[in-house]
Image (cartoon, rainbow, N blue to C red; front, side, top):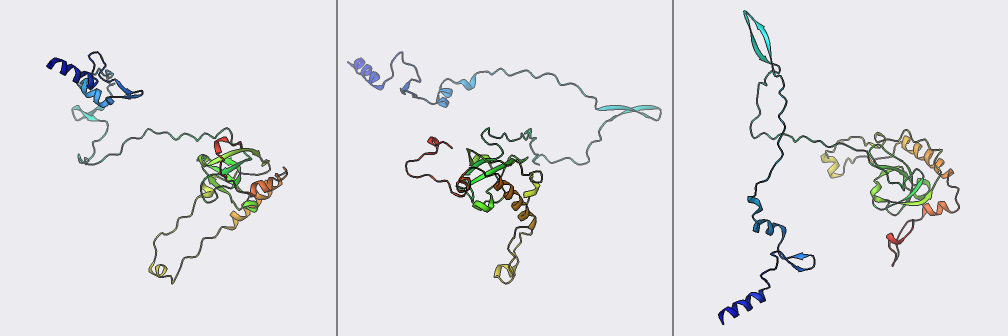
Length: 249
């Protein structure tokens, strides 16, 4: 009777005699995790065969120098006068290589993009060119929708199938240095803190304004499609029941 009860308890526990140790409780979910199986099988005790390192090529570090009646051996590089302490942190050598950002195939010069983030999100803009750092140079134009010459990341734009002729635009002067900000003092004086002597507001330089007007005039001249100005002026949005992955741009 005792044996029968033990067999019934063993059967109810679910551990059959020929069942695998790590069986699936439900499809896709095993009883034990990978770490638990690793511990149960004692895989940490097994010897792991590593690769044999090749013998390093011996480099010459000393040389013979004539000295009085004979010669002596001196090192090629003079030893440093001071040695770093053992607890001095040393920077780790980085083997990273800066690769140029690959432009999406759907983004070409003159393509109208939809901004998804930032101050002008939802606006439709015209793509001019890709800068050396991988950012996209875009413009509204400013006269139509208020978006000036800016840099945006291609991860935050939607490329549409509508294109504009920008062959007349000269874009050689626009690079990363063109958008670099001037360094100023970040310290706040007591007078500025109390509001007695406030810093003057930042204004756009005349050169930037002239460049914006020049680019806008040439881009607007290439807007020959009917209602293209109204399309650029309108803001993109989704209404109830619309999903971006089902729309065609």
